[in-house]
Length: 184
Ligand SMILES: CC(C)(COP(=O)(O)OP(=O)(O)OC[C@H]1O[C@@H](n2cnc3c(N)ncnc32)[C@H](O)[C@@H]1OP(=O)(O)O)[C@@H](O)C(=O)NCCC(=O)NCCS
Image 1 (tube, rainbow, N blue to C red):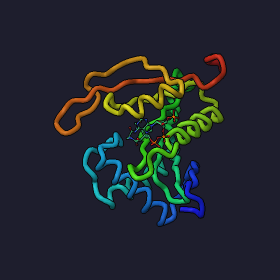
Image 2 (spheres, protein in one colour):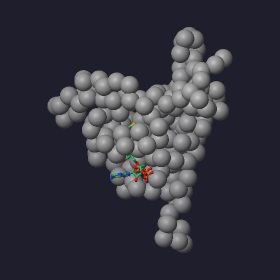
Image 3 (tube, helix red, strand yellow):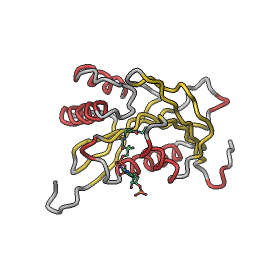
Image 4 (tube, protein in one colour):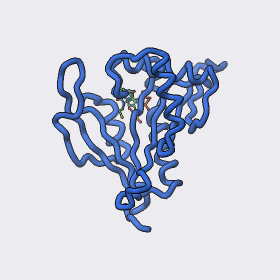
């Protein structure tokens, strides 16, 4: 915490890790997975696997990792996926995925800040559409994305398997440029 009662919330794109940043990110991911947080994993894979995952992520050309911090400590992340070069037909659309905030850092506006930062990044890269999908059970995330203007376009009845149950998923898009025009 800083000297005030309100912690300082920040979001940034990260391209390399300090040891402290990687440790904090793994801790946040671990806590979100245990909480059932929609980060793909349903059981924590262990610290080594998480470290390998995040280090490997920074090497993937199509992926950008954004992290959020409370008073300087990483407490969540989100990824922007650019389309592969061969996909000329969908070269205008990027994907937001794997957004999570550690349970101990929720309610500070961080997920909203991260989403807006990814939109800004995608817009700056020239993308016209941002796609995302979310488990139907993630009601806070669904309310947030809809409030931010994401349009639902489909529901997949067999989207994920969690604790032996099949969970549906909702698919969303948002036009990033004024007027929803796609050009270029
Ligand atoms: C969804 C999630 C990312 C939200 O993170 P967060 O940082 O706590 O969210 P924010 O503080 O930015 O709040 C975003 C909006 O949701 C609302 N909200 C947050 N927590 C809420 C809760 N428990 N109940 C109702 N509304 C809530 C906020 O009021 C805010 O709306 P506002 O802008 O109108 O005030 C977080 O709960 C999480 O990681 N959940 C599990 C993983 C997940 O669902 N990921 C998304 C899949 S892509």
